[in-house]
Length: 37
Image 1 (tube, rainbow, N blue to C red):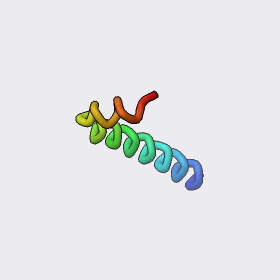
Image 2 (image 1 turned 90 degrees about the vertical axis):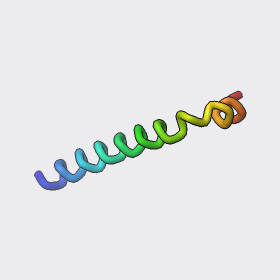
Image 3 (image 1 turned 135 degrees about the vertical axis):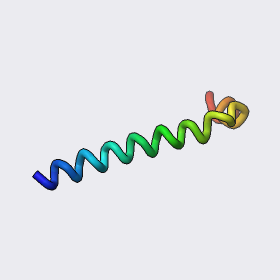
Image 4 (image 1 turned 180 degrees about the vertical axis):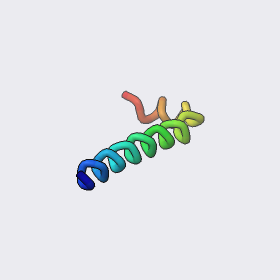
């Protein structure tokens, strides 16, 4: 029971962290364009 709750919290925190990272990198279109193929 507690393991399942921990897994869900880890997934939710990872998803939130990736969303925050995307928001932080969003104001850098030049960097994204240069790294894109």
